[in-house]
Length: 140
View 1 (cartoon, rainbow, N blue to C red):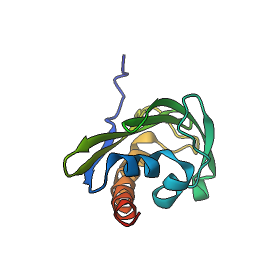
View 2: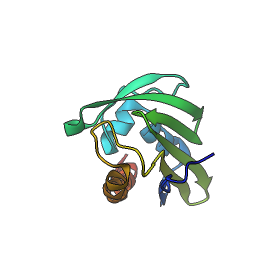
View 3: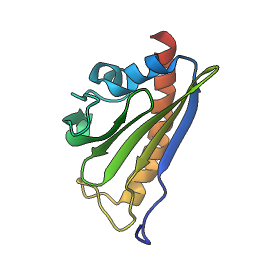
């Protein structure tokens, strides 16, 4: 059961004008992810442990928790968060949803910052990041 201090997931959704195979390649591989998000040694394999290189925040340990090829990739990010990318094929492209969950008003990040503060910043940040994804997909 969710604690009473749980904060809502961050959700970003947009239609990418590209086939699902192309979007999947960009969101589920280390090379693809580095082009719009962060460098990592991600592999789309359940149980795969990898590092996200978060720049000034150092390296975050991650672990792939779910892979449904072409449709969904989820991984644990650091100690509290889960990041999921969901893809749905549409006639005009791929419906992409990013879900960043695991927020809790009572918790602090590894860097001692309140989740509520960080969530606010990251919600803004994700907006730009998914726009960058849309650009990369358009060029790829």
